[in-house]
Image (cartoon, rainbow, N blue to C red; front, side):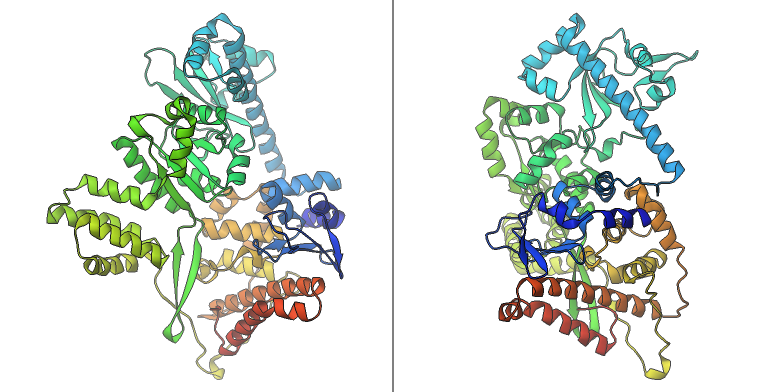
Length: 609
């Protein structure tokens, strides 16, 4: 944590935020219009003494200088840290020698892939051998700008890539490891994509990490990709996301298509929020990356039966990739039931006439806009697809269709929307709605987490002395140590907001833990290497002994303390900006939240309502 602290000490949050927000003095704090949503009355507060910020408007969140840069530039924690470290003149010495060596190795693979993309594009644009590929692209309606912007290329059947890369200093091992060539018997190599049209695939940071290649003759398969490598994960990449992410965030909408040509034609006609799943079934990783930019997703897949099946599979991917937004429902006698809601709005766009999206856009781009505007909710699409597979005029068909659809409806936690779709399904199947409602209750009961009975104190004699929270370690670190070392406590903490952690590094570790689970290797795989050492130290943190339910009670106290600190922190910032009676009026809600916490302490209940 020393490097992070060093950067924080050398960076003034006021200087950083002032570059994008006009701040005015408001007592001891500074105030301005929030840069993350439209507003006319300033609700964005910067507290220089604490080097923190908070939005009291639509965002309702805040943090330190790292979290501000992450939110403003849509960066991961490690990227924000590196950016601010360069600004502060701090060397990131916390990286281990192993991670530095890994970065250098991966850098060589990215460099080889980029050099290959340049070679391929040169072959397409400037050699007679690329003329057939150029005519093909022109015939598909792509202009020169799109071809150059996406760096499309061609690999001649005679090869030549390996020799060019070797001339430029790329080692044989790096070229092979990057998946650019295949080894053959006798120690030689051959190009992986001879005689094919090349589509460079970039990661979200814009680095070439692999390629898609289309045959220019009758060779099969028609499309092949770079194999799985250290820098290319086909199931975790979306074609075009590096160029689409700004538009996705600005429009608050992501459109997922199936093919490279669909993306190219969409971007050429200024539909820059379009990405592709690269011809594979949509994966939860791809959806997870997209949802960082927008939770409004439109699936634009084929109109045939295969496309319908792909959409059904896509629903599963979206469901698995949800950021589990947990809603605690308090039941009688202190029992809390946790329900998850699908944290995304998913709709389906079906092109007419069995055409691909690129054909629709090329023929009439305004029709594509109409299709976007009229995209149907995923539940309706699935409902029609399910009913089409079964003979709903027969009792057996009605039963099978209902069994497939009711789990989908059970995922809808908005009672009005759920009732709407239940009525629609009843009409579609010709079944009385009360009959379906009973079956829906059973489906819903099987789709939520089991009820959790909160432990209560028996009597004072049975109470053990409370565990001690070290001042040096801090409440945030102690909470993470409990969570990382005690997997059985997971259900007690998933409802906590990451905003309870003021430290950006703690917030990032908690965010990944909440999504990934308790597997240390999985957590490390998703975290920036700069945070690996912190996770390892938290997992090795010596916890005081505790028996029975004491760990649950202790974690409950820690979580309540973090919530209390977060509320007080926001309260103080708002009090300094809006003194007097106006301050009291605007802080009724935090006061009520504090009262809840105090009541929880009196009841000695581990978790809040």
